[in-house]
Image 1 (cartoon, rainbow, N blue to C red):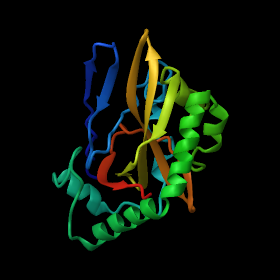
Image 2 (cartoon, rainbow, N blue to C red; image 1 turned 60 degrees about the vertical axis):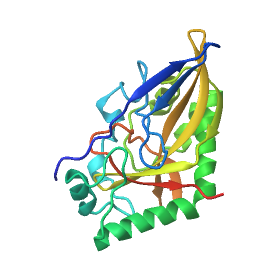
Image 3 (spheres, helix red, strand yellow; image 1 turned 180 degrees about the vertical axis):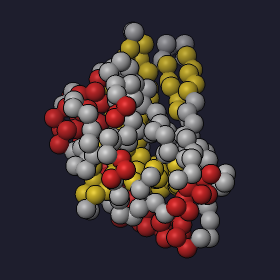
Length: 226
């Protein structure tokens, strides 16, 4: 299979007179932020190789599954970290339309699982995350605990409205986002964190496929419906 397009990440910070530090992450299509995890020691981005993608990644096949044309378009430079892919290819259009339809029709359910994730971060409830992990992913033991440990204690959190659709191998990742605040080193800061989700048998699960995983290809951005 041809090399995949890797998501770029840039981080900027502005220090205000009230000592508020706001970290803004790179925008990937129509204002949707991407966040590679900003993992600290023990976080999912730094713990083991199996934390970037599931150990059984080659066995994961989603419905809808990304057609090869998605990756061919990306390799040809048809999109990028900031631009959605576009093509009149029938397979591509079917995939784009179907994933967009899933996000719009499942907006309430996506908000619900994002709320579960954010509440788990607020309360330090790793068990709640563990119960929502994708059942077909062979994630390293203690993965849910590392998800929580990768950030300082989160004080406030709310769901963001954009959802980015990504393709990697035969998996489709719906990247939701949360706007959060925490205090670290005496400084309060605001952040946008990524929450990777997969849609398996009509149910939403937290995916272990991280935003900066090799092969992640940005397809499009869809806004959650009200």
